[in-house]
Length: 129
Image 1 (cartoon, one colour):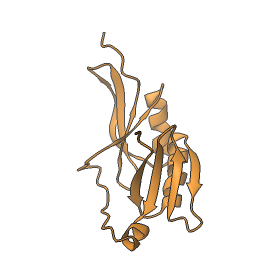
Image 2 (cartoon, one colour):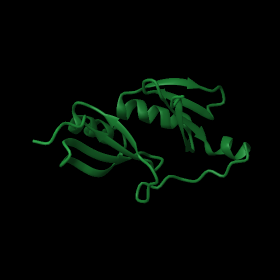
Image 3 (cartoon, helix red, strand yellow):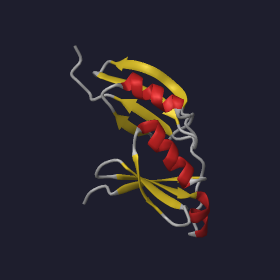
Image 4 (cartoon, one colour):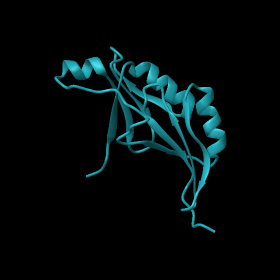
């Protein structure tokens, strides 16, 4: 068994995909004709977006994300946290935490996307000096 995809519930999958491609340098994947579901390519596991309406039509009761009270986060690993943070902010992400050197040997920063999801932009963990 392996993790195939993670689906986030959003108002507009198309707008969210456009944002993720611009903010994090990802490529779009499948987008349904009705644009109520879509994906971005992130490697072996796909990051997917489903509209609130589609989920409601399927009998689900989706809720809005809240970065100030998150129950999870998405993390994108990069070689240049500061540069990629700047790109995300320029694309419309909202700053949650500036670039920070963590005691466990990782550089981190956090933003909130336009849907309220908490996103970590981080480096590879290295052994602390």
